[in-house]
Image (tube, rainbow, N blue to C red; front, side):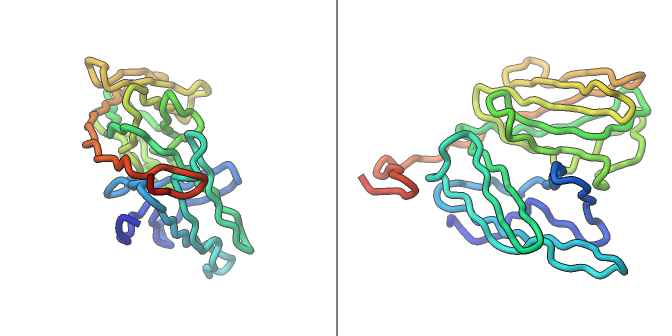
Length: 227
């Protein structure tokens, strides 16, 4: 409701599609070019297609759902869109007093093949975000020393006072690596070993300017009311 410009969170062409094999699989979202401000209603437009036998495509999920901060009772809210062929769920988390965390993963000693990188915050473990997944075409090649991992998403937002938690899974490792980084950490990076390889995770923090809040309204039920 702030404006009606599209902010893409997932945008793939037919020749760069993502393979979904299970209801537990999540879409690998991309970095939005600006933040979503929940001052009023945020609309999510979904238009997903599937490939059929013979190469034809048809609609898998198409429609509109919304996020109203007035209905947010916990840290994370689930919005859904049900069509005749599918049900798509969106997990939405409101981040108060956010800090922007920009993430980079560099290979110090290789070669290394990562399978998956996910992120969440120390105060909300339910709202995880996929930063990298080798199964969706974000870089299945083996990364050598001196190279970096091309993350599908490299920016996440962390509430002030909480830590960013990264979950890294290698192709040849059963035990994932879990790293917790805060904006008060002196070094701003962590070095970890995965098998015979070694990588460095760097996080750059940016303060989001505080928006002026209106004290002339309050939430009652699912609506804003003037005081």
